[in-house]
View 1 (cartoon, rainbow, N blue to C red):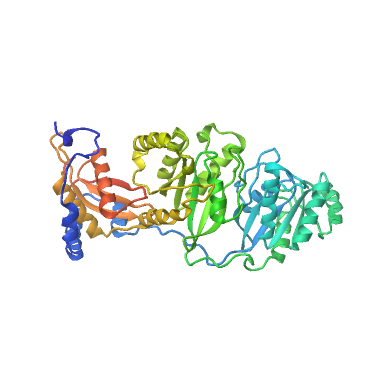
View 2: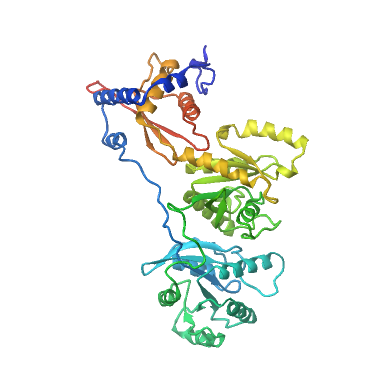
Length: 509
């Protein structure tokens, strides 16, 4: 039995062919003429209504470009557990900031797009600010203070049911030094009876305290009107974004693999709280980064510990935010710790990127800790466990020292160019014709399915639809996918190949 007659193989044993040479020798006009002939032949088959949109190109979806200016920035600050993240969720109209009935859930400064009365602005949630904090709490407080530095206005949240505490007074002193417009929010005013408590906060010296219930939404509209009065039209702390917006990069990996350290090195500052405690990052943290002479938007995400349905509390919501950040990204950089054995967690994260249809770069981190014994085992693990993503460009880095961070740009460019790539219908059908002529699909039950026509229906990621006379074996589809990669240089992106099995008109079923 030849390899062609073996079920489930990858058709890797076909041997050499001259498909690439024949394709290179074919002019665009010849390829287009061949495609037009095949397209005309499709009229003899029973086509469905949606086929017309696929064949005409109407199904193409364009990626949304970002606006060219940076909207004004509002930072929300306050001591721990006064309801800052709950207020964030109320303002943006969805549960996106991680909220749990424990102080200290938010640790980094986290940005969200917000809008009120037709005005767009960026809302920055921060961790609880504490005076004389130490350890990780000191790092969290530093992040909150940095958020104030780059904000155009500040919302100071105080718990009206408790009143102004010594920590609140310390926050007030910090804000006075910064000399930013401040809107004072008296939170947890759930009804008229508690408004007297809010009035007591006039003593803080920031003018009228706005009584709000972030949990129920009471008073948030009036408070946001007051915020808009002190906001400029665009941020005074950011340069205009490049036309089309910066490319969006998500940093993924299991806990403590070095994602936050890498973002800090790329940003050139302590942008994210880094601690030996695994799982420090809980919300996606984004930052505009200059790399390779261009601006990129990097997003640090929470480390994925376990399957999403098994996670609990803040970990569960952090996993949801990570999935959302991946959906908004264009390319994922998955960090793999070379000093540890590649795990099932690593495999799940890679599969999540593929399922999301995002381009992929592998970053082998902690390369400075790799010794010769571990290197031999690592090479074997990569060959066995990462064969399904051998198409992804990779870089060897040290997030801690910044070693080889400059090489990340080239890998990102390779992945994104592949993710964006479009193949003309003429070239695609010429490729399919030459490939099938050299390596026809094996007979199945005395029948041989044929590829009638192929078209690329989208990029980002590249998606192809093949019109066929019968079902193509999974192994043969993988073979086509592999040869598409090799021929058209689709490194760094997943490729989706779908089939439309169509029968000839008038054929009795």
